[in-house]
Length: 184
Image 1: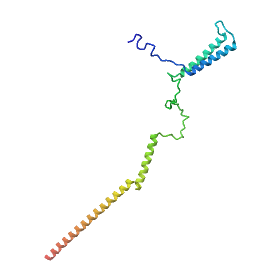
Image 2 (image 1 turned 90 degrees about the vertical axis):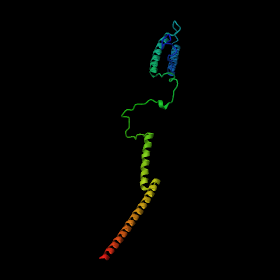
Image 3 (image 1 turned 135 degrees about the vertical axis):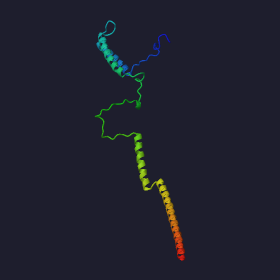
């Protein structure tokens, strides 16, 4: 482990950058101080104006207030230097209940719209299908007609066979009846 411990050292510290707003505020304060010096014209012992020192203190106080405001809004790293137009980064604004309009129709999401369209398409298809206008309905009706014909033919054949059996049975019964009559 290094001498200073794990967190020690100067290399890993966060760098702080002055924001453009702070620089502008400092430049304005310096210009105002120079204007005041020129207006006063008085120079103190150390080469600065006595009035300028008072005003400079006032300006420093106002600059510190500005810096307090900026520090609350200060962004990390170079975010303060670069303005990014990222729509995903927009801050969510809270809405009050009174501001929300309930009468306005709610915008549907893409999935909700697609789901509604799918249901409507299914209903339209079922109406067309019941009316017999779809390909599947036509194929079903054709198959049904074929099945009906086959059943009618089967019923007719069965009926004919039954009639023929009845006729044969009647003929056999008649033959037996004649045969028995002749014996009497």
